[in-house]
Length: 67
Image 1: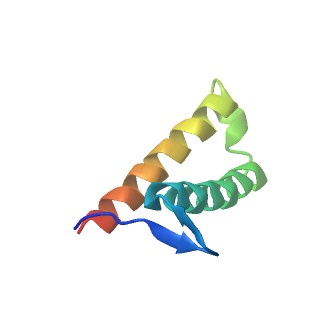
Image 2 (image 1 turned 30 degrees about the horizontal axis):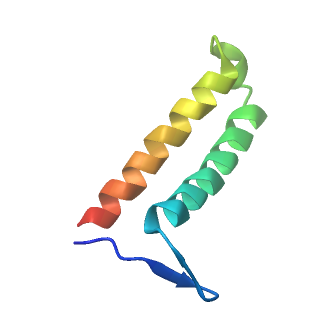
């Protein structure tokens, strides 16, 4: 499948930018759950851990849209 531009209120946007926003929203939810369960205190660098989770979620979204 080819990625084509998305028309968003008259502005053509790259589809990866919409996927990045979606991954960010998923990461926010996951970060709040991890914070509520006090899992972030178990990692060495919480900000780096959250960034890695964002990259993993983004890669999963991009790969799922590929098919």
